[in-house]
Image 1 (cartoon, rainbow, N blue to C red):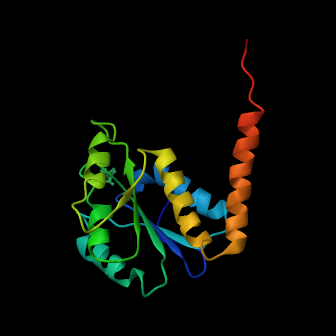
Image 2 (tube, rainbow, N blue to C red):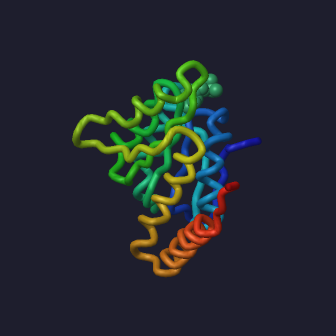
Image 3 (spheres, helix red, strand yellow):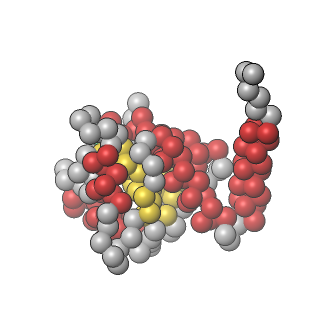
Length: 169
Ligand code: RP5
């Protein structure tokens, strides 16, 4: 599986992650963006192994038309916060489960941003990745009626699925 420079035409959402090992989780953000037909890109940008590229990515983001950046990382997860430090494009942080602390370290590293430079932080793992994408989609839907309709339908399907649930009584 490769995550190198996946891109659709003129991306509105950037998905970055600290390692290709994060892809197992972060692919759920990309899958959601694909499902909604949102132009996006996905690539590895490591905070501690490629800091210069990380800054370049963040600095160029707004000028390239990105409206949101979904950043996933595990362990001492600096990536979302450092990207947020270099751009005013909203950053949605996804804590990736780590080997020893199961992502609690990632979550606390991402969520505890000091006042002034926010990172919207999501649940650890797959749900967080998917919900970060849904939040980016909701942000875009504020000025895109067709996307808003798709989002309403997506929610309606979940309502109908819950209403159809039965218990083995
Ligand atoms: C972080 O370290 C990455 O985001 C990843 O979650 C973790 C482990 O990276 P690898 O050693 O698998 O490349 O930078």
